[in-house]
Image (cartoon, rainbow, N blue to C red; front, side):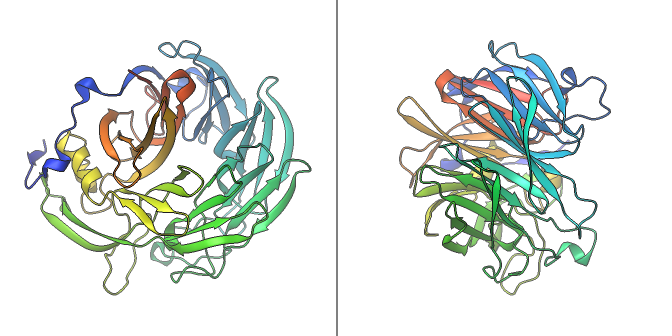
Length: 416
C-alpha cells in the first residue's frame, strides 16, 4: 500500500469537493458488448453524431469502428461494430459521415495509410483516400469542407535509444472533400530538435479553417491554413515544476522540483479562433544541456496562436489530482499523471475545459470563461486510461473513452 504524505500542498491545490460537482457519472459501456468475439477490443478516440444520440469510437485492437446508442445516456446500448480492414487511429464525424484514419504500415520505414469515409446511416464505405503515410489524429473542419490528418510516421522506440530523427518524416494531409484531393503540408525545418522529422501528433481546426498541429517529440507547434500555408510555428517551451513527487518510493511526497521540462504537447483543442489548449503528456527522453532528461510537464497550457502563453497550469493540475487520491506512484519518476487528452465546450454561458490524465484515470474539469485564470471545479474518475474525450453540450453530456478498461470503456457524465 502506498503511504501518502501530503507535504507542502498549497491552498490553491486543495482537494476538490466533488460532492457538489458540476458533472457526475451517469452511465458506462464496455466495448466487448459490441464485439464479443474479438480477442481484444478497446475504445480510444470517440466522437458523437450531430444529434448527440450516437457515439462512434476507434477500436484499434479489433480493427473496427464501434457504435453506441446513447438515446438514454444512463443505459447505453450496443449498436455493433464495423470491420475496417486495418487499424483505426482516430475518428471524426460531420454531416452523418465518419472520417477514420487507417494505418496500414508494414513497418516503420514504409509507413502507409488512408482516410476511410463511412456513411453512418447505411454503415457503408463512401470513399477511401490514400494519405501517403501513417495517420494519427483526424479532424474535420466545422464547415465540413475538408479533413486534416496528422501523418505521424511514428518512430520505432526499440532503436536509437527511442530518439528522433527516424525517417521518413511526417506531415499534415489536408483532404478536400469536394474531390478527395490531398494537399501535403510540409512541416520540415521548424524544430531545433529534429527538423527533418516533425512527427505531427494531433490536429484540430477552428471556425476560420485554420489547423493547429502538435509535434510532440519535437516540442513544437504550428498553425497552418487549409491550403497548407504556415501561419505561425513556435517552440512549445519549457516549464519548471515545483512541489511535485519525482521519486518512486511508495510515498506521495510532493516536495521535488524539476527545472526546464519540455511541454511536449499531445492533444490540442481550439478554444476560439485565437486560442487553443494543449495536454502536455511528454513522449520522449533526451539529453539537452540545462533541460530535464524527460519531457512532459504534467499539466496543460493555453496558447495564443502566435505562440504566446496565456495560461500555464504548472504543477497545480497534478497536485490537485494527487491530493484527491489520483496518483500513479509507479510513474512518479517518469511523466507523472500524463495529461493526454483535452476537450473544450460551452454549456449554457459557461466555457469548460476538460483535461484527461492517462495514468491517473481522472479528468480535471475547469471553468474557463477567463482564459488567463481557469478554475478547477471538478475531478471526474474515469475507467483505466482515458484517451478520447467528447462534449455534447446540447444534451448536457460529456464522454470519456478509456483505452485500457473493458468494463468501463466509455464513461458518460451529465452536467448537474
